[in-house]
Image (tube, rainbow over all chains, first blue to last red; front, top):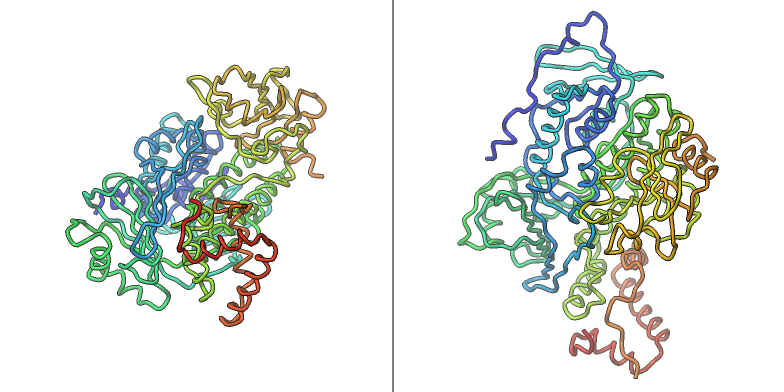
Length: 538
Length: 68
């Protein structure tokens, strides 16, 4: 077994809070030290907010779990100061192969667009992901940031008030009470916070079970994603093989609905299945096995007063498409700058309602995509299966059928069309950079665009004049002046100008476009800044 | 003679496929089969061109690879 996920990395230590005569008040408490909770805490701490992370455990993720991290979350992690170790360790892949029955029907290349600092995807075990986040927390602590992780601190009760929350926390040395101005619940799909607050989690359960196994082997399989529909070694079902770092392979096997989960998980039942798949002569060792059922559901609202839900606690998707952890990181990316402004009194509390509007939009898009993938992979009627098999048969012969094959539509960030924070598009430039869009990266000689937009409101001018700084009601916006000449490959022009000769973009701290015009107009941009900070909601 | 299109030609293919499944939703198998038969005839009429229809029949039978 891998040592990383068996060793405590934020072990229990007694906190002075446990001996305080009255409950100590923190600025922000985060429940859950998974990828989403840690990202939220790092984001807030980097902005000078005091944050306390409570986790009922003291170790990183048990088993690989989320393994596929998309470009957008990697860009977010760059802003959080820990993108590089993830990319250095992760496995980059571009080629996918699709098999039907006993034959390969086609292969595809993700053909990542050029001119981005980060790859389209990396595969990395969740335990490494969490380990690097914890290392980043330690680094921030050594720099004096007010961020703390308390292991084996299990929240047993939550009291919600107009201006704070009160938490009853159970530890190995008994319980204590602690308070926070704000609470971010990142405690996963089974969220105890959600349950304690009596909130619904409505959606669809797919009547199927999947066995996931991490297998260590010195095998000759290439770094590709292989997906089987109805393979000889798992008749009537599906299978997935995907490479992770350290010679670990992720294998997913669909099992069907009427199974005995405990029985199927036992090595004596798992190993013969894997031998059938990998061949008898392949030596492998089983690192981790789990069985899960797909669910696609979300909370009706993510914000409940001073308690805000993020990640799987707020919304759950089936795993095909890697839309779980990836979307959770986009939640915190969306939330943390808003919360910081509200805490500082620079934006009204209602700005946080735009987190609901924008991330519910994102969750619904993810649920739609992952439900469709699940319907394709596990057809729920005879006709659905016939159509699916017809698509696969045709895909072997004709290119037209290949876009219909759905073994997961891989996570891409959503555009917040219709967000109350957007100003109307006054430019008519490229679709992909319309207001609400996440900024696409672009090369700038030896550097890239996105790191220059890190974490604050930016006025991006491309061959346009504008003031170096705008201050509007406590919001400071700094200019980043570029020219199409800064990028000889012309990607900056293609992505941000299109047919226009110049452009001015107002870009939010989470690198989404708030407004754009062909040239600077003081009144219009001041209005756009107010709008993007929740001060003009109509 | 017009060629049968066998390269991707449907806008937002996932939306189309979801709508196709939704049209079959809740139908018994014989009803679904009948729906597919009607769909073939409706689409054939829309295409109209006899040559193209002949190519389509061959393509669906997976007997001849006309265009890759």
